Length: 574
Image 1 (cartoon, one colour):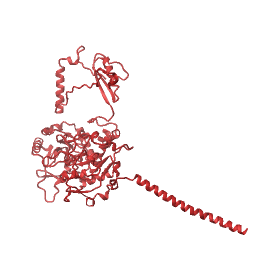
Image 2 (cartoon, one colour):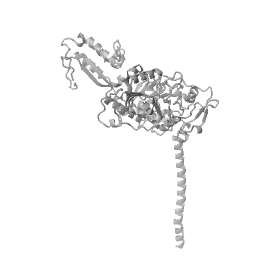
Image 3 (cartoon, one colour):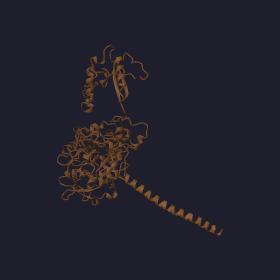
Image 4 (cartoon, helix red, strand yellow):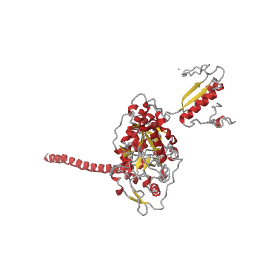
């Protein structure tokens, strides 16, 4: 009994001890296995590129701390730039892929210092404050990714905002050395001051292969429609000066010019405008009589009168924006901030963000040779419309011009809308201030300059009587998958159009039309038509109508081939 009890007392004491040892063993084994799985997963899903590990972050923005890259003299140079590039030819949309948020991902290259073989930097300024702000805004946005393998768009940390500070050849060599350059495919460069003396090219002179260019001075000759992005020339003065928004309405001056160093012909025309219209026109220039130490960039003068700039811009209804050595001018931003309607005289200039912004809502664009007529042209604009334009001008500045962040993110949003057009912003979202977006009725003074984004087209069919032919045309056109609407214009005043459930409450009477003769046979028809066309030409300042003779027939539809070989066998002759 005692022995059994003693054995029994040891037994229960030994079993828990063995369980504890096994428990420690299994926990240790499980921990090792778990750590192994975590390590395996980390290596499996961690970005494999060295570029990804070097994230573009706050502590890497100092040029002095950036790694040094020496460019060999024989480094390759990109091609000048393909003017035929479009999104469907030079941009790889497949690298963007599909994502639920319909948002492109942008990668910023790590900052590096590029020097030639002698150790001379490729730029005299390094990384400017403006470009630093731009890259910072992108890196803080939802567009940014630090994983280059996920990037749809790549932005170099090479500052090309101001071509005056660059060595063109060496900068091009630095671009070509980027690990993912691939002839510039899906790379985006930002430039605001292109060209240089004496020709001042309207696009960046740095060879850049297929790279997209967000440029601040494009002309119709250098702008690649739907590929490049026209951006404003940033005005540091606008950002530094706090200019409270002023309610729209009449101002002290009707027209104001505040640009300095204008061409003498422009200056002469403005002086004549001042002589003819007196106090309604204020013509300012650089001050020559300021006391020592005065900030000349914030002052403008008319004779002995000194005005604060840009505050004086708020005292005028219209502000002249003329081309200088470059098409893009920073004064445009100053004028918008002041709520002064810009009067832009710069032939062939591609206005900033004109791909999405309707500039006729906020500005007046006049041909340069019409400068002598500017007062008469502006006087013809109704007061209510001027107030709407003043309000719109200020809102454009607030939304798209006020900072490098606004400029950079607007550029990316435009490119994003191209990649994901089905999720793109609408005309109203781009152009209507929030107070208008929430209202149910838009201003009737403005109509969109761009077509709606709704899919399909509207077919307009003109007919007089031939009902059988009309029905054949309607039947065949209705087979086109992209047809959105079919509008039939019935020109016979003496016979009602065919009955139909979808026929619409609208008739246009022609009292002078005879009952038996067509409109084209009336003796006054040619005279009236000529007067109408002349009216068009006088309003537009040029002949807007173009003669077009075109017939698009299906291939082989008339030829004697088997029906199965014809692409469109059933359309027939219309």
